[in-house]
Image 1 (tube, rainbow, N blue to C red):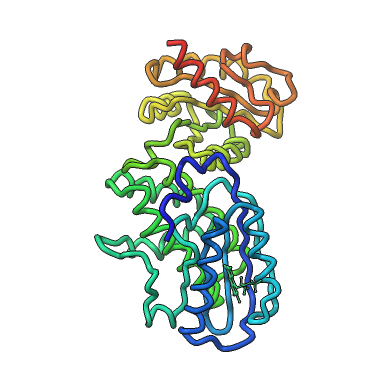
Image 2: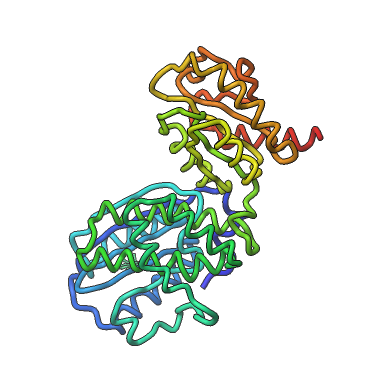
Length: 350
Ligand SMILES: Cc1cc2nc3c(=O)[nH]c(=O)nc-3n(C[C@H](O)[C@H](O)[C@H](O)COP(=O)(O)O)c2cc1C
């Protein structure tokens, strides 16, 4: 087992993540699987790779994550391994946080459940298994909002980020693998669901203490401008800010007072207000300006930065100054970095 991989200090480095499925070319006994995994763990550890291997009914499913060089070395060996065939990559991407940071290679199979892996994590203390089926369902349905809300609720109850990752997020990933192995969900659902969990894991892991999600470095309320029906910009930002470890809340207020109530209740470091990405909303600028004045009044102590976005700003047909904002996003990309800089600047200038 690893001690400090996946910790906040790693969060600046990108991690390659690969998930594949294959068919076993033999019928491995629990001892065969243990032997395979024992050797794999040693090598994974030496190369900084972590992951999970599921085996059921002649099918393997494996997720590996680690520095790109280490991962390709291991992948080259796995691809050539005659113990399995029909190898098919399900997803391959770069992420900013590991899902299995504590596991050189977590083995999960029903056979192994019966014999109990010696490397399994100590399962002391109260568990969160009652939440696993619901979490798995939410992840497979790609319902990241409810997934985040569930984790936030457990964090409020005092569960630490570490406990949530170990007792809820990892078991959920396994439950999802089980669902796939039992043909209860498609591969795409599984792959997307695992990515959702990865984002969630990132959010809870960033904070070392309990209050993990709340303990993120910055918080932001991502909102559509009051009355704006197009939500694309706000949802695109949500992924990025969550992935970057921010504490994110979303709002789709119909009125200015609804928005102000949320700014007051949440007290974020930043608020982002989106107009439509599809249509220019010239007529909305005056109202947006007023909304920004009111938002600043609503949380004068905490609110450091207000950003705006949408087609008008992307095309430079409107500027931040025109609506009294601190920053106008030309696109969703890069906003996390820019807003973090602005918040830091604001805090230093106090
Ligand atoms: C389904 C499956 C998963 C494997 N996972 C890993 C793994 O995560 N890490 C690893 O080092 N080897 C893993 N192996 C074993 C490698 O394929 C290979 O046998 C081992 O790395 C030794 O490689 P080498 O013969 O090139 O030295 C796996 C094998 C199979 C069949």
